[in-house]
Amino acid sequence: MEFSLPDLNLLSNSNLHEPLPDLILDIVEPLPDLNLHHEDEVDIFEPLPDLNLGQVDESAHLFYDEDDIVEPLPNLNLAHENEFAHLFEDEDEVFQFVDEEPDFMGGEGDPNFSPNGGQMLSDGTQGQSNITRTFLDNYERKAIYDMLLQKSVNGKLKKGVTHMVASHFSVSIRVVQRIWQYGNKSGVNDASHKKTRNCGRKRVQLDIGRVRDVPLRKRTTLRSLAYALETNATTLWRLLKAGKIKRHSNAIKFSLTEENKKSRIRFCLSMLENSSIPHDPIFKGMYNIIYIDEKWFYMTKKSETYYLLPDEEDPLRTTKSKNFIGKVMFLAATARPRFDSEGNVIFSGKIGIFPFIDIQPAQRSSSNRPAGTMITKPMTSVTRQVIKETFISKLLPAIKRRWPREFARETIFIQQDNARTHVDPNDLEIRQAASELSLDIRLMCQPPNSPDLNILDLGFFNAIQSLQHKEAPKNMEELIAAVEKAFDNYPAKRSNHIFLTLQSVMIEILRVEGGQKYRTPHMKKLSLERIGQLPSQLKCDPQLVEAARTYLALG
Image (cartoon, rainbow, N blue to C red; front, side, top):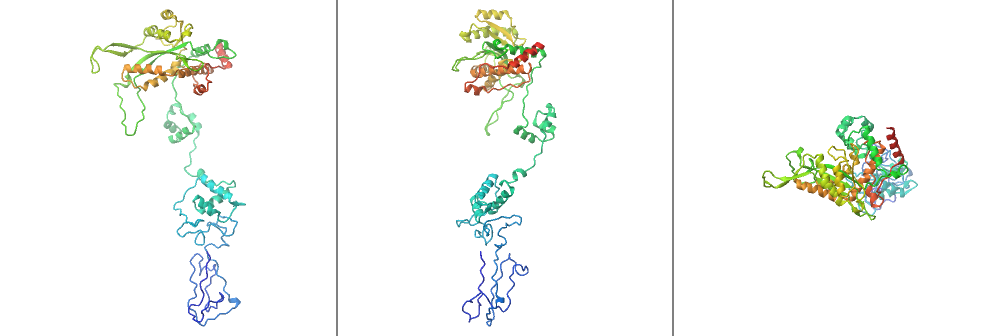
C-alpha cells in the first residue's frame, strides 16, 4: 500500500483559494527531518506523525529555488520493496523469487492481508486464521513440495505461488516457505520432517546374543528373562512381536538308550518298500496296519476358557476334587482310510473305540435313582486279561464287520505299544479267535518309548479329545456318548493326513539317527489336497537310507 502525502494547502489563508501548482513550498519554519535513518525523531515501525503544516503565516510566499525543493516522502511500509524483497522474517532464511516484489509480506502492505488475522484468498474471500498449529506428515509435506516444484522456474518461484499452494492445502504461507527451503537444502528434493528420526524417547539397545547365556530355567517367562538381562518385560515383548525372540513350548519326552535308537531306525526302514531300496526309497501305503492304544478321557478340564459378554456372570464349575475328575479309559483302533479315484471315502479306517466300564446295579438309593438301578462305572484297573477279552469280544468282530471285503484276505497287522498289559504278539487265543473269523491277524509292537510312531498318539487322540470337550458331559453315559460321537465324526481326510505326518516323522528319525530331537515337519497337506497333488506315499532320500543302514551295521 502506497503512502499518500497529506494536503499541504494552507488552511487559513483566504487569498489562496486554488491548490498550489506544485508540491514545493516556501516553509517559514523548517520541516522536521524525515530521513529514515534518524533514529531519534522517526521510527519506521511507528505510525507516521501528522505532517499537516497547521496554521501558517498569511504572508508566507512561494519560491522556486532548486535548493529548497522538498524530496518526495519515502515509502514507509514495514518492509521496503527494494531492501527486503528477498528476505523472510528471519535473517538466516532467504527465499528468492523471480519478481522483485515479494508475495509473502504480512501487514497492511500485503494485498492479501486481513485485519482479523486471516489471509485474503484470490477469489476475494477471507481465509480462516489457524489458531493451533497443525503438524503435517511426510505425505502432506511431499505433496506441497511436489506442487511447488511443478510451478517453479529454474528452481525459483513466481509471485503468488506460495499463496496459491498455501490456500490449496489450507496451511499458512510460512509453512509452505519452510517446506520449500528445507527441500532445497536437503539436496535430494526431500522435504520430510526430522521427527521420525529425532523425536521420542531413545530406545535402549539390547544385545540379543546375551539371551544364549541365560539358563533355560530363567527363560520360562518374559519377566524372569527380563530380570536376568537387567531390562524390562516391555522391551522383550517388543522383541517378541518383532520376531527377534520366539516362544517355544517344550514337551518332555522319553529318554532313549542306544538300543532304543537302533530299534527305531530298524522300524522306520521296515516301513519302506523293499523293491524301492536303495535307488528310489518310498514308504509303504500302510493300509493293512491297524493302530491300537488306550487313553483316558475326562469329564472336563481343570481350566477352561470361555468368551462372555461384559454383563454376563462368570460360570461356576464344581467338583468334589480336582484330582479325581470323572474319567473313562477307552481302547481305540483305527487304520488308514481308503478313497476311490474321485476322492470319495470307501473306507473310513475307523474300527472302533471301546470303553472299559462295568454296568452293575446301584447298591443304595439316592436322589437321582433308587437302589437296583443299573449304573455305569469306569474300570479302575485294566489288566492284560481285560484287554485280551476286549480283543476277542469287541476288536476282532469289529474288524470283521468293517474291513473292506475286497481286502479281507490280506494280512492285517495290529500295532500296539510295549505296555505290560498288552497282549503278547504270539498269543494263541488271539490267533485262534482271528482264524475263526477267517482273518489273518498278526500282532506287532512298535519300538519302546516311541509314541511318535503311532498315529493315535501322534495326533488322532488330541483331535477327538478336543471334539469331546465341546459336549460338556455331566455323567458317565454322556461322556461315553461324547467320545464315541467325536470318534465317528472325525473326518477321514484328516485321518489320512496323520498317516502322511507319520511318514515324514520317520524320515526325521532317520535323519537324527533314531533320536527325538527334531521338529514335526509341515508339508501344507491341505493346500496340496485342494489342487489334487497330495501324495499317498512319501519318498525318502537314498543317501539318508544308506547312512541309516551304515549306522546299524557299525553298531
